[in-house]
Length: 465
Image 1 (cartoon, one colour):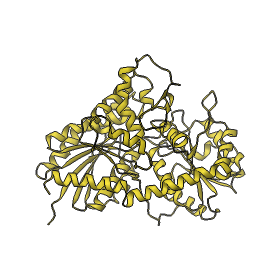
Image 2: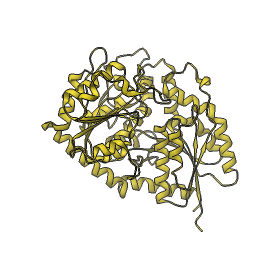
Image 3: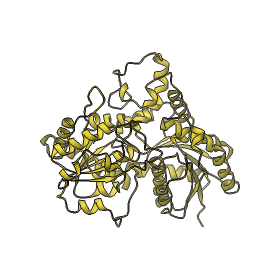
Image 4: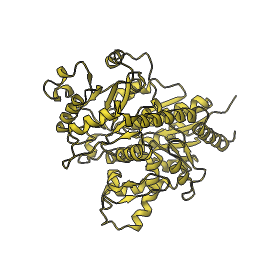
């Protein structure tokens, strides 16, 4: 009988962090059924019903353990989602340790894999004589920034605040500092200190699993392999995304069934992105002005772009649309409140483009379906993703904001028309289709499949198989 290899993974709070590390675990077990994964799930406040429902669908060789939720009162006054996530992990460390002790006091633990915000849990790997790994759920380009920001911090004084400065990360498209994540905009902030802590922790682990693939980010990945002692420690195993059942019934899917092929623009800002009331109005008017078909997942407005990331609003989103909008666009569009089965929507033959916040999960899902994008980043690393998509891969258009930070309806309508039926968009579609083919091959038997095989072999050898 084949020996069981035990792996523990620690996710971060938030559905968009939980899904990638679980989907990685599913892919690992699909190819290596002698592995067993214990997934430890921290939470800020009660565990979401969507998360619990998702976890119930997992195979028997993935054991999920929901930790006692951290009381939100312990994080009072902490506004930035990254801080909230990290502090949730800090308050959950004792629970994580108890789970590891109860699960692996007899069965040996081969590897501890943590999400990027759960890096403080890595200290337990030594105690259990296990290998330690980061699961990096975003781009190799962002990973490059993690590794090289420490050197930038030493070379450039903390007073330097030139956001127009262009930075050339090795192997990556040039990016302005203004498009860096919020955490590195101000070197004197607590956010930046947190960022550096993560970056330093990454240099101490046995490996980093990246949810990207060689053909999409070859320059960045090759350059990373030459950084420090990262050779043979990087495993690009993506694109790993959530799959949905084709039997899932939904109003928007039925509506899409009635639309012409490649005619609909899907509009969604992810599981946590929000727009202000003024921006919702401009987006609605821009969609109407474009005269293009659309499916819009609408969330209630907020002046914080990440307001819905860790908690949801009970307000009815449709009430915030401009007066008469739904009636005027009923023959062209559909607005659904808060949620849609995105993977199934993007896979639908009627959908021809995606207006996205550029969260990495959404980027990869769009790549896997070969859909060009309008890149509308809101927070976190999304602006860097937008730069890669527009300037590097050239598969997206990015709207321009006015001096008040608002994208006006005329700009929105212009980009939608260009993406959906403009002559110049043919090149973007072709490049995205090529990227789709490369993603499929990478996962089937190409670069990503080989990286996963190398990782599993390393774990088996470590366990003495």
